[in-house]
Length: 332
Image (cartoon, rainbow, N blue to C red; front, side, top):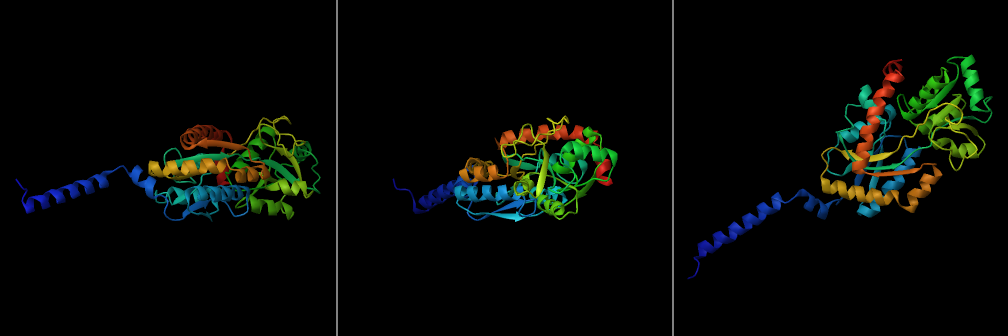
């Protein structure tokens, strides 16, 4: 018996409707795998152009963009010790087309009220990339030949020695204040919008010393600056004659790894593509060359492990904020 024409039409329409419903309800992961990314991606760098973080992020974005098949354009949104860019990232649409660097200092500033976001739940973490080599540098003509000279003078002249850093509450500011506390000295901090500007403040003779990641390195090699100490667990390969703070008797270690993330709510499939792209970028020869140039040790962690690391640092920052009286310091 033949099916009536109208019956066949209903069957076809019913099948099409079922297929459409199945497509609409298919896991977004499957759809994202096939279409993302189909246009350029914006990468928010929360630091000024030219600084060490900016240089490393641009290289990562170039390589990751090749892997993804779409360019990743770096957009600098500097200010507030990296929190202007972090706030913009947290508030962006979680579609995978806005990603950015997440400074580890979000764990501190969120507790101090500077950043209206909770890093434990308001970001999607993609990768931890590399660490930073921090140090204290002074102009070549400075009377401070060693860190001992620096400390002795600061003890005899409380508050007179000035130092430049990349912003109040940031790693260089907090690290220097932690060192000052342990050394029993009082310093006068001079905040800048980023490491590049802080460097110029010292090179221009406006500030006595620089506390920064390795923006000072080429100037130390050129004889314009003198490196008094680095802040890591071990001496750096390029400046192996320069001692660490710990070696000199001050038990302070500062290592603020760079990381990459996106707003919360990112599709898991999109996150997986980004994680894979930046994993390859961190392992690339191009990034290794830049990391070596910046004395930045590779500290790669995949997104889930990076998220756990952030939670651990958050808890440590809670203790440090009270120890250094950072809330009072930021109001002064």
